[in-house]
Each structure stands twice: as structure tokens, then as C-alpha cells.
Length: 69
Image (tube, rainbow, N blue to C red; front, side, top):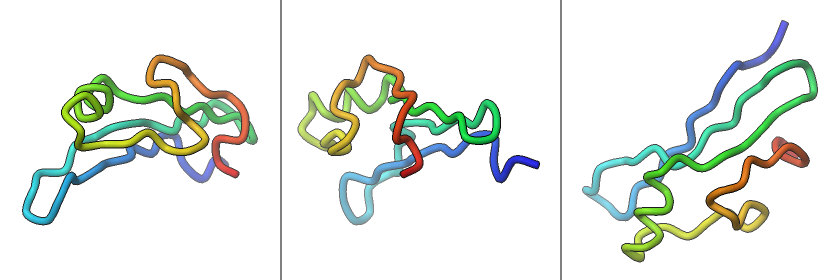
């Protein structure tokens, strides 16, 4: 049994601000996960309200390795 099918990552620019979904980790099979940003992440970055995660700098890429490490 998989531990999860999908985790949605959210970001809040500051106290009192609304939370925005910025990415998803999806489990396809045991040990196979992907991470990708949602379109909102790039928009928040362009506004100066979000920085990409250190290991995942490309907003347009789907990451297939070291996702849950």
C-alpha cells in the first residue's frame, strides 16, 4: 500500500496572507515519485513572493529523482 498518492505543497508569502498551492509530489508506484511546480509558483516568483526550492530550481521541469529524499 502506498503512503500517499499526492501531496500539494503550499506557500504563504507572509503572516495574514492567503496560502497558495505551488507544487505537487505525486506517487506513481512504490519508490517512484515526481515533483513539479504549479503555474502559481512561477507567478509568485515573478512578483518576488516565492523562491524555488533549492533542489528544484526549474519551474517548467518535472523532477523524477531525489524527490522525497
